[in-house]
Image (cartoon, rainbow, N blue to C red; front, side, top):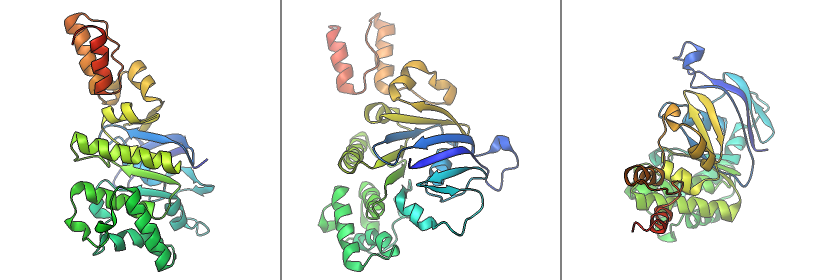
Length: 286
């Protein structure tokens, strides 16, 4: 087992009662390998707070989190090396500027390995491998991170975490601000990393189209509580998403609309636009 939440709650210091906890009595288990998980929920549902507990960036105010055999409680334990936990579970923030601060991409990506006392030559090798893994070539190594495009900055910040070789990778809204083509490129990159390395990857997202097409497991947060943990298919077919302030994928919405307006009997649960078009063609409507 990689990460296990045991009745975990977290209240920020400005909150005064249980009802306003950022997360409340969450129990959740995540394997150390071979999981591709979407973490979803409306703004303020507790997604990011939950993610920050996954590498002990913040501590629970109630319950505990087991991370690769180390039990994290509300009190700091001097016997636990928290930096080692953060190496095992790498967290990529939503805004890459939070993780890019050196004068070159190479120095930025090397920072993590060097911080874990890996010698400079090996840290450079890890950095170059990570840069290639995220789809950038060596021409980026000596570029200033602040002169990169938004998508390139995201890739560079991800490379900085991958260079530390985490066993679990957690990404907070990595596709935000990208156009549909950019989102697909990045999702294909994450899927390729998942298949190549067998790492568990957890992605926070609002995009239900991506959730339906790419993920094998989805965890839903609503008002600080974990309200669903299962497959996307079951979520979209059997649950009322409006109760959790979520929307349906566009394919489901479009095909459902066609059924209602044209009195068709289309199978609305199609994951991609291509699959939706094929379903419409079968009905002889294209």
